[in-house]
Length: 84
Image (tube, rainbow, N blue to C red; front, side):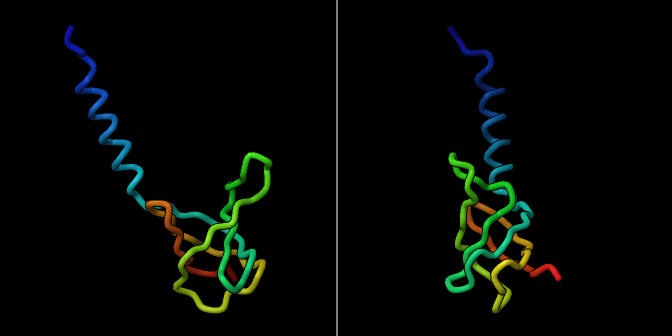
């Protein structure tokens, strides 16, 4: 028997793949200066603790506790600005 919904499922899969490649804007807080670690807002582990990520940065010398604007794409994070 032919699966009549297969073309629709295939199209939905393509759309999800396209959405996953789009960059997203995220806010975060610097938790460590060297090497740079950032806790992105809303990212928690199963225990409820914040998760640290090691981003790349176009900004130099960011102090611990600073709020930073980040771009996330393909599981990579780039710090683009420090909030004043």
